[in-house]
Length: 119
Image (tube, rainbow, N blue to C red; front, side, top):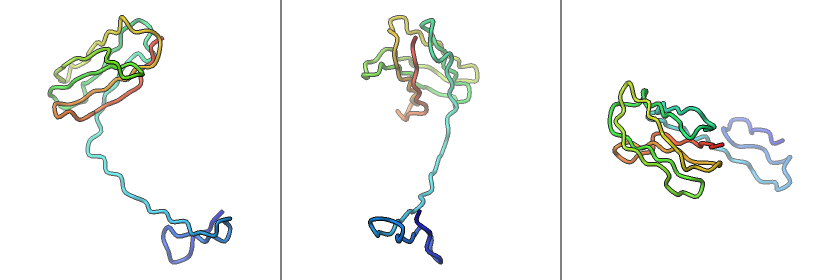
């Protein structure tokens, strides 16, 4: 295991490494501007329907897209989010497998993405 060199940040002594190279690690801060709170249930889906809860989103227009694992569009819904926005999403033609739920805002920014499993 490499030991950190004294008086430095992110530089390590390479005497314990086979390549005799210094390790350099620089932490980059992550900035999260807004975390959208979207939930869906049930997942896994067993009855061909799931519900997308948009009640924690800012009021406005959103698009709900469901695609299969290959990217084929299964469902697209335009919705208005409000404090009572629980949107049913029906998947009657879906065969068992993995699907992707994506919620985008009016500016086409993805505010939520989630893997759905249909059984």
